[in-house]
Length: 258
Ligand code: NDP
Ligand code: 8X3
Figure 1 (tube, rainbow, N blue to C red):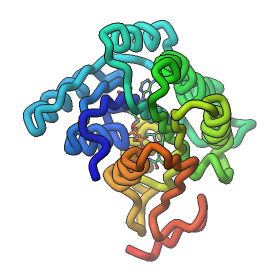
Figure 2: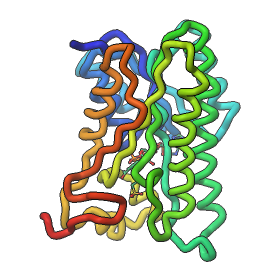
Figure 3: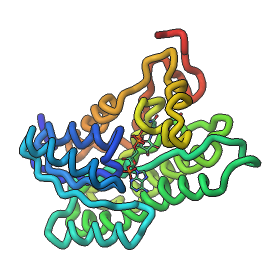
Figure 4: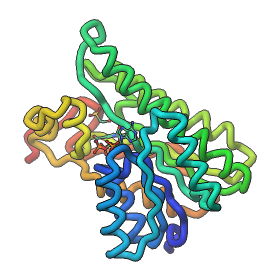
């Protein structure tokens, strides 16, 4: 049964990777979309493609989730026009650098904390009140296996994803008494632009992260998210961890499997 058709789904970080795959997947299921990211041209191209393929209505906005005023303005534009998202996918996020804590770059720390935690809070604070007011909605927070277990030099990225997990738990407590659902999706290694961003554009180093095994694709994760969103309203997935079969925890990965 398709419970996604006709819903309005707001996806942050829709210009690449998991967010873009979700946009494609949900458009295919007949949803309408609100797509946010910093790279406007990419959103425009994606919106045009989805409109042509599926007739999808897309409302896009160039939004840096770290910019609270920009987030509030984009949310007000949506909700003020009567377009309250049925589903919010808090996906925008990144790792920046990989260094020992005593050698780390505080600029990288700011980027991760401001995007992965404060950005998610900015968006949630702007959208969730409208869901609560009409007693309908589903928030999906993209965490990570990195939010369950630390790994060497993951420190601040790990801390942000542990934080996302805490926020998913906390949000569920705070909306108790309403029908609103809050779900965490925690993927392991997925080959997207993630590692290229982490290593500041070093494509070679990024490629090495996924060498020797078959990582998750962004589509694999969009599939899992579509499953969670499509469940009947009395079913709430609190946390879903998905990893490539070659990966058994954050660091046990069979790199001889491909
Ligand atoms: P990508 O780099 O491919 O995509 C990241 C997306 O986030 C882009 O669309 C980017 O858009 C957006 N983004 C980053 N910073 C901001 C910002 N300040 N404001 C708005 N949008 C922003 O990586 P993934 O698709 O892999 O990452 C998506 C999420 O999945 C992240 O939260 C990541 O931590 C998480 N994750 C990734 C895993 C992986 O192995 N790939 C595994 C587990 C979790 P733009 O640059 O245009 O703003
Ligand atoms: C991304 C997964 O293990 O590269 O959240 O940090 S990992």
